[in-house]
Length: 129
Image (cartoon, rainbow, N blue to C red; front, side, top):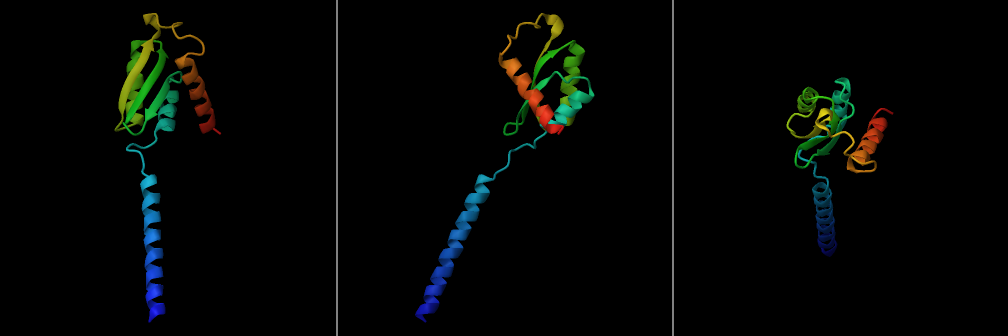
């Protein structure tokens, strides 16, 4: 009788520990509110001759930020349209500058845009391997 009680207590303890471990595991594996669309967005930008655009994706808040310099206001508008199609459900923050607006040359080598462009290039290379 005592053995049976001990076995039940032991079994209950093991079951409780296992349930706790599973709860911790699942709570640490919560997914972001939005899916990862970075590769799809870059592919669409490349397909539409907009490969100089750098994007930042915030999956938790659902925002994709476009950075860089484009040749015309039409390209700026086209970029937002293309990214909206590739990333439904995301908000698009358009930080693109039009080259003719005198922006070219403002970004210094090694500045934020240059660093972002280098990271962008490395990301694109890694997704094509």
